[in-house]
Length: 238
Image (cartoon, rainbow, N blue to C red; front, side, top):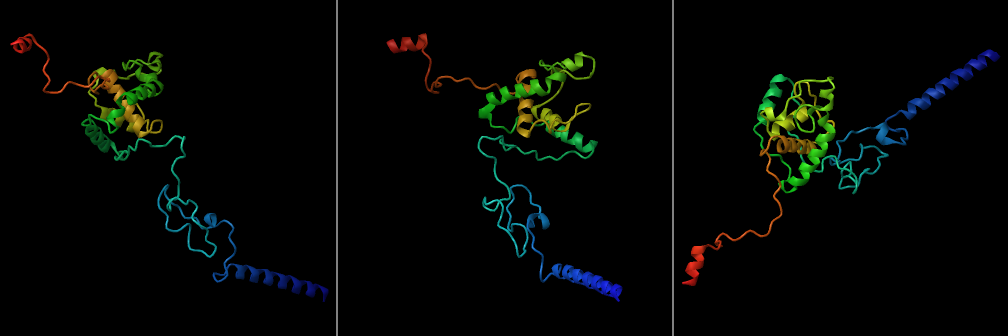
């Protein structure tokens, strides 16, 4: 009799526990969720506009970024922006050799960077710093392909820029996608800095390819102003 009572108690406990589980999982009576953004995840792209905070649930919480509905915020003042130049690489990564070659041929038609020409002097200065830190180990500070890694015998085949038919666009393309034994540097340099390095390469090693920054001068004479000559002086005396 005692054993039967124990069995009844066990069965009653199991049925009661099962009923609690079934009731708590009912759609009519959903369980309390403390972190709805983790329980009901909704992925957003950074800085996109979000119509709903997460999803339409009873315990919905307010939008987590109150920046006109954006899901992310702009960089804080004083921090480094990921793309402060606003330069976007429209072309995607080439999927095969034909796409790569077509993109490289197209890049050779680009003879100017999209950066603001008013900042040319500063861009060239930064381009030199980046080149010396990132590229000179193989290409050499003189762009002759005789960097310390090449001179050590560990690596060879780095060309001299003076012997190459290149443009600022093709240098940027190679920095972005690599070429031959050289890999892509898109992970090390952002789009704007890749253009700065390309501009420096053309300015330093392909003389005349990139116009030098215009020096500060006094106001230029007007078009109708004529320089004083002996003939003018004679006419004036008459």
